[in-house]
Amino acid sequence: MTLARTSDPIVAIATASGRGAVGIVRVSGARLAPLIEAVCGRALKPREATYLPFRDAGGEPVDHGLAIHFPSPNSFTGEDVLELQAHGGTVVLQLLLARCLEAAAEAEPVNGRQRLPGLRVAEPGEFSQRAFLNGKIDLAQAEAIADLIDASTEAAARSAGRSLSGAFSREIHTLRDALIHLRMLVEATLDFPEEEIDFLQKADAAGQLVRLQSQLAAVQQRAKQGALLREGIKVVIAGQPNAGKSSLLNALAGAELAIVSAVAGTTRDVVSQTIQIHGVPLHVADTAGLRESTDEVEQIGVARAWGQIESADAVLFLHDLTRADQPDYAAADAEILRGLQGKLPASVPVLDVWNKHDAAPAAATPAQGIALSAKTGLGIEALREQLLAMAGWQSVPEGVYLARARHVQALGRVETHLALAASHLAAQAQLLDLLAEELRLAQNALNEITGEFGADDLLGVIFSRFCIGK
Ligand SMILES: Nc1nc2c(ncn2[C@@H]2O[C@H](COP(=O)(O)OP(=O)(O)O)[C@@H](O)[C@H]2O)c(=O)[nH]1
Ligand SMILES: [Mg+2]
Image 1 (cartoon, rainbow, N blue to C red):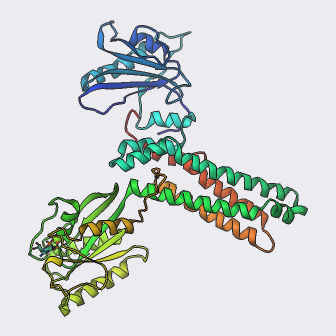
Image 2: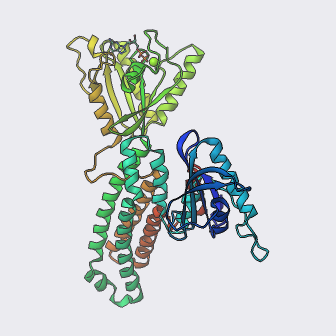
Image 3: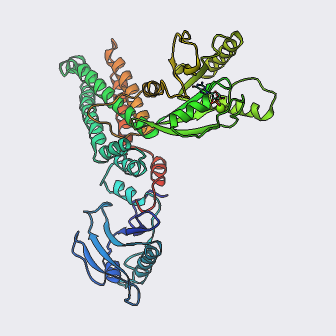
């Protein structure tokens, strides 16, 4: 996908494929008047819906529907946009799309030049990309459009809506403005070095920087929650055979997904399911029981289990409470724990979960972790709450805006540059040019979020993941 500011006209069916009451074909480009004339048989009043026949080349109606013309710049893309709302059948929309392409090719040349050079079918995300390139929305908002469309939970949809309306971007702009103010101070001081210490002190540069850092921390906190809502975390259930791992996955998912059996070594392949807790997606993986095995297939299953564990954001280490007091059972658990500690970074939490509480003697209460019964459901709710806490979820009263891992990473870079800036400012001999440089880098990282600073290849990646017609 090229990111040149081209405005060659593009067309796409904007609605999902399949049957529906209404389907929309959308065209965007410069000077759509000849195309409108050809398809609608007349000029259209700006931003007004007109009911009319959409005509084929012979003047016969392809369908009847509403046509709306949004002249540039007051349109979604900032270009001329034509929206044709027809009946939502696959064939009728394909006909209408083909008619637009044909009409554009036929449109009368002016002074020997085609008025609508090469109307073509839009690439995924191309309408949103133009809206971004024409300054109608920033990059974070464009991403929010895709996230709103892809949202799988109500919470995700609501927070994507908030990002789309600019709530996230406004916070980024507030940070940016404070940062620019501070940069101006430092740059001015660089120009008048004899006054430097005094000048920065009087303007309370240090205080400004501290306030900026605390504002940033608040935005980071909310963006992390937003990214969590969008991306979720990966939870792996691990433990010895027969501890009840498959039963636990089923209990959490509320469905019989994984095969449960008293035969140890039943689960060989990884079974994954995404569950939602308060709208937060958790990708839960059930794995083969961890033990030495001579069975070749089971060995592969165990290797896959360790592979899953290595990529986990959190691990549920499942134990069988009815066997917990058996020395060889405890020894095997200790062996697994050593494996977990060897493979997992310290930041990945491991929660001890004691299953089969229903069948265990009353005296058997674990010293730590959660006791539950995958069979009766007792304790599952407590586990769900614990999982949310492990994921780092805290409901934010003002509402979360949907964010992406990309945003969280950029904010992390801003944090690093501000910390370095603070250390230069606090140094005995203030290193003003280094301070200025860190502040500049902090601003660049911030601008990556809204797309005011960034590489073209990043934009290509973001927009190519959109659906066609958006
Ligand atoms: N009493 C009792 N039995 C359970 C519970 N959870 C699982 N089981 C039984 O333990 C056996 C192994 O369960 P499964 O989920 O296949 O364990 P996995 O090998 O760890 O996946 C099966 O016979 C289950 O019915 C529980 O909470 N209570
Ligand atoms: Mg199993």
